[in-house]
Amino acid sequence: MFAVSKQVKSSSKRLHKLTFNPILGLQKLFKQSIVLSLFVLLWEIAPRIGLVDPAFFPSFSDVASAWWNMVISNELFSHFSASITRSIAGFGLAIALAIPLGLVIGWYPIARDLLNPILELFRNTAALALLPVFILLLGIGETSKIAIVLFACTWPILLNTIAAVRNVDPLFIKSARSMNISSFSLFYKVILPASIPTIFTGIRMAGTGAILVLIAAEMVGAKEGLGYFITYSQYNFMIPEMYAGIITISILGLLINYSLLALEKRLSRWKQDPTA
Image 1 (cartoon, helix red, strand yellow):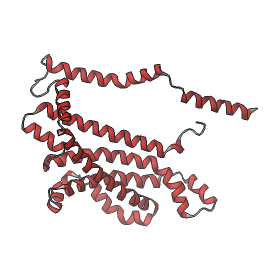
Image 2 (image 1 turned 60 degrees about the vertical axis):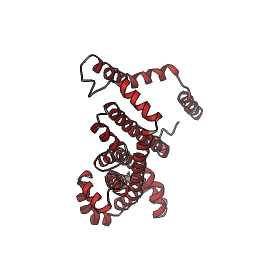
Image 3 (image 1 turned 90 degrees about the vertical axis):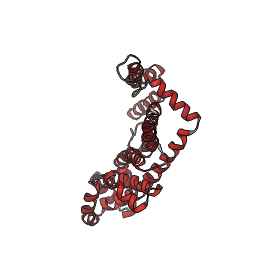
């Protein structure tokens, strides 16, 4: 009787989660968008009533119009594609390098003792402070920009991976070892899955950092990219276009963040409610 009752409760929970309530959905959408809508409204009104100088802070509609004109002319896409290509290249290389290295350092104490001093030195060095060094060594082309993104993204991923491995619940490890599984199976089936949430925290931090560092690097030395476009627009007093470029960077950051969140949820399904 108890088992039947438990199954009924579990089924009702699943049905409740699968049932979509449009009213609740609209309420949630309203709550999430009200502050943003007020911000856009204030942006539109402030230049028109003289709170700010329209020459330096144009209305949102003027910025949106400039953004749309650049989309139609394909000008924005060329700068966007240049920036996203550099970001993905450096970000992907950082993931490929930092996660395996972090797993090794977190799992083997001798590796942590040997590499910790050099890691502490470089992780406390600002990436943009090394930009002149990268330009001198690698030139002003694509390689230096990808390298600076790689350097900036490596540290949050590496440090979070090390912390994730070291903070795995010891009970998981003892339970797995009690079943006499191999070291590889322990690492692959226990350590790595338990580390994924913390690793993804570092990956999301690195994704944000990749955009910020790249934009700054493009402002210093580049012939295309969103950072270059913003600086070029400022120098030529193309103020609506400048703000349109800034909005595009914000959109790009949101896309990267939500994509990583979706991927994290997919890889961390084991953490969800077991009754679901």
